[in-house]
Image (cartoon, rainbow, N blue to C red):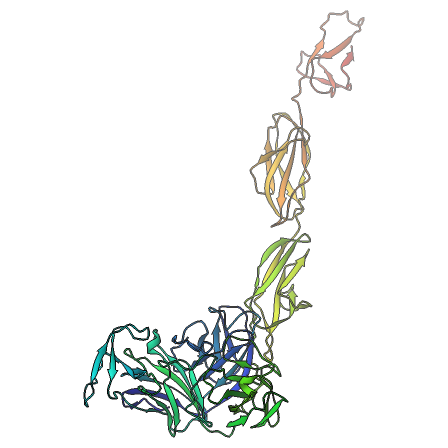
Length: 608
């Protein structure tokens, strides 16, 4: 690369090596940024045109990283700004969506990319540091500059014009001050030169975007987009030269402007002769019939302007645009009556007056390079969102976002992608219903010719359905004199609590216990016990209850009544009364109760 070269009071920095170029297209994905890859080189120049009613923009390697220049407003003095491009990359470039013009979701964009690999393209910048402007023979002279030698006389005139820069006086000029016809040296006569404006923030510091073609009238400096003739304070580039292009800071006949007080860097691109490059002219036929323009066979890029018409738009077409469509650099949509197609001998123009009315036209054409290299960038994106559900009773919708490219299909796997099942779905959402096993899902995305890629996966974790189990075992106990441990078995899920009921299960009281066993002790009322079980996200369920039947405490009662009888001549019936419980047997004792003999009798009466 060439180093900086000083010309008069201009600083020139030129990047010059060899040209690789291609015509491509990409589809916006709506994300904050999108990397356009697959170019095969780091571009020095990127020209991008949306397929809709929005203007073109350009970024070069000399511009502040992350900025680009809009070409769609002929009066746009603004410096290259952010919001179009994030970076020029080793294998392409990255666009931004902050301005809504370079990465709208689903929007198609066409681009031309140039490297500097064989000398076709030179990208550079220059910075004037002494600037004057003349308009109607009146010169604006910045107070900070010294330009009083050589018999030049200045007479102050009252300021007030809206074209007078701040902090500047308004002078008549009886002589010439400042370098005339300064040349920006790129080492060859360009076949076309683009001057893309400067880095400043005020209109009087900057050149409007402008270009010229090495045709019949190289000094015909044109806007990229439609507008009136270049303003006197905006026309900086004045002609092509044998070694570059000229900058004319003061021209009292036409009123041209290099840059006033606060000098700023201006960017340019030049194109030199190359076997795949052609610059010619043609005469329009008034729009009928279609006019075939002979040039290089099968061009991939053509740019046309009308000679001498600085207030008309330039038109361009790339081989990636629809067959009959072409565009201006301005905020208008495609036109099917301008450059209507590429052919084996050149290109066709139709009825659009700015390319085939009356008069003469000049064009710049490129062939070779790479066409149809649709820069692609398959980005799988992310699926939202993972969830945990209950087996056999679930539904949800998964959504893909942040992807780039078309959805080819979805896939699912229940064994961590040991095997997978294809799902025929090319939308950004997928619904699952009543799955019974933990399942992973992903989308498969493919952008153009790029290989398909998988999105990030999501996992739908399936909890088994709740099985409450049974509490063991039922028991009958004596009131107030009891105790045992109940055990829950056969359950699926975890114990949330236990419950008890003393009214046959009509109402239940909670017991704080999350284990599978429950102790009861000295209960005095028949009680049912159950566990409440819940499996993950599934509904809770009640176990089968165990019934602990409580018998009242035994009361022996009283046998009536005592009697005195004659030995061997007696008989009577004894009766038990006041007892609680059932008679198990009777007993008798003949030794005052020391020993007792069982009598088989389970009734409440006993014969003597």
